[in-house]
Every structure is written in C-alpha cells, then in structure tokens.
Amino acid sequence: MSHKKSFLLRVNPKLYEVLERWAADEFRSVNAQIEFLLREAAQRAGRLPNMKNPRPDDEAASRTEE
Image (cartoon, rainbow, N blue to C red; front, side, top):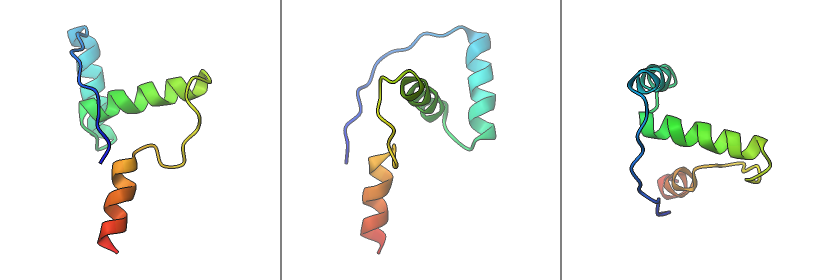
C-alpha cells in the first residue's frame, strides 16, 4: 500500500462547495477529487509523467482478488 502525505488545505467556502458537487458528480470524495485535479494539472504541465494506473492501491487490490 502506498503512503500518502497528509496536509492541511484551506480553501474558499464557495470553491469547496463547487468541489463537493463536482466530486459527487464523479462519485469521488472531495479529497480524491482534489488529488485527481492536481494530478491532471501536473501531467498537463509536464511535471508528472503520464501513468496508466494513477492509483497503485487499486492495482494491488485487484491482484489480491484474483
């Protein structure tokens, strides 16, 4: 299982509401939605290589189910 860095993020309440609705539309938690958006932005900026499976935890879980 990969370890994730925890940190406090302060956002404008209106922006949080937008993120909350967007996350619900995509069936994600707000945290997962923010991570998804940051990962996409980093990839578009060339700061993060494209990854076939951006969530290694899912890959490990699928192997144990087989």
